[in-house]
Image 1 (cartoon, rainbow, N blue to C red):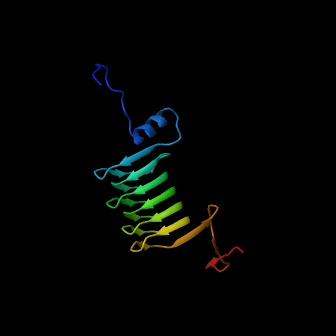
Image 2 (image 1 turned 135 degrees about the horizontal axis):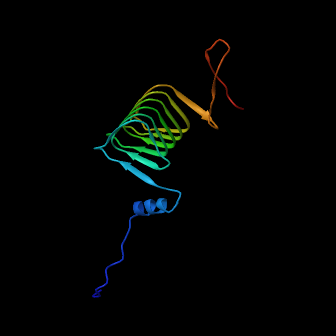
Length: 148
């Protein structure tokens, strides 16, 4: 308590994830703030939290989109939790669309949760093992195949 030794440095959980990543750890987390605007595609092995504006495709492990965020491009993620504006297609294994989300584009998913009040202008396609369950009939019209 009264020693002249400095206190040991403390790190938060986010700091530990970043430290683990620099040492070859499996997880990392990146935040793109509301003051950030990116033009171009964004690819990351990390989990992303986006509050800013993106004009380009987003490809990441896990995506959390803030309410004030806008993404103009395709989204590909293993899991996505969307609450802002999206203008482009979405492909995610585990997708959650919150009530503040405004989506203009087609959605492909394995598991889907939509809060009441969310707005989606596009088609939904359920995937099975990464493949679409909809198939084209010989005349080119959409056909639904149900597994028994």
